[in-house]
Amino acid sequence: MDRRRFLEVMTVAGAATVLAACDRMPASAVAPWQGPPAGTADPRMRMLSWAVLAPNSHNLQSWQVDMRPADGMLLHADPTRLLPQTDPLGRQILVTLGGFLELLDIAASAEGYRADIALFPEGTFAADRLDTRPVAAVKLVRDPARAVDPLFAVIPKRRSSKVAYDTARPVPAAVIAALGKAATQPGLSYGATSDPVLAREIGGLAAEGYRVEFTAPAKMQESIDVIRLGADEIAREPSGITLHGPLFWWGTRLGFITRESMLDTSSAGFKRQLDSRMALMHATPTWIWIESDDDSRPTQIEAGRAYLRLDLAAAAAGVAIHPNSQVLQEFVEMQPLYRRFHERIGVAAPKRVQMLARLGYADAVPPAPRRPVDRILKA
Image (cartoon, rainbow, N blue to C red; front, top):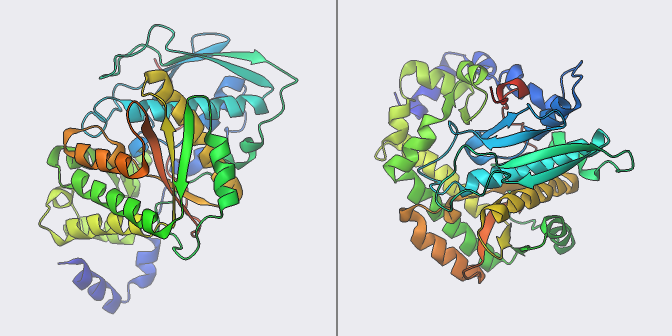
């Protein structure tokens, strides 16, 4: 039974009310967005409760925290939550961890602390792999004079809005300048465009990036492996790519939605999945990016910190934002698009773009699942 026939049957059966209630997002999976659980005594745990809300690749939440230092913590990349196919060098994971560190420091300000962050305290990773050494040592220093970072208040509102934007409403130049200021740090700068021609060209390249990733079997399999299909799976493991709702609930039970069918490039379902992603890229009035002077490991971390501030600034301004990583990925099949994108926006080596994001205006979207803090602690 295909999707159209399935919906026709369910409508005729008078099942619309039942469908609407099927397979909702589990409340437990989004509970972390409410902030630290009541009674959390350790200020470090309260800070981490906010840090886990950082944006991250494939929603894998690839952070692991060692709490043994009494005055702080050690941050590691979780070796079980990497993306060796689409992120073979581990760059995107380090950008993700940079966002985690920045959110941790913002949360520290609300607790009256300063987070002194030392990157790679046991040595910097090689350029082509991550390892088990700490990414950062964080020392928390009581600092009553430190003001609460104004971005702290918008943390619960932060979203990655993976929906179509109003193409008739580009983001005003003054807003873009303010977002760019939030993202500009030493060694980092930003670019942006609302020019219809250039925005369409970038959208076309980004859409083609999805095609390349989706039609490279090992790369697509990596995404399929982290899909949580339905509310029960999401409740057990609130991370990864989550698919839920009436269509998925019934589709899995009737057998026309399976992980195997998602990999079948000849299927109608695969085509719909790819077309929907590509359509979002074209429904983008404004693009913004963060470029770096080099591509060192510390720079990747700092790019993540800068993007986190841009992300929160967008939330404060009421602007929808959606990071788009495909044309920035380093695997072999993506290299022609990587070069075309960088050439089109005039960024040449040793500089490179670390983050690319869609900007625009759209309806609000719900939060993505997060694991509770006790599940990110290193044994």
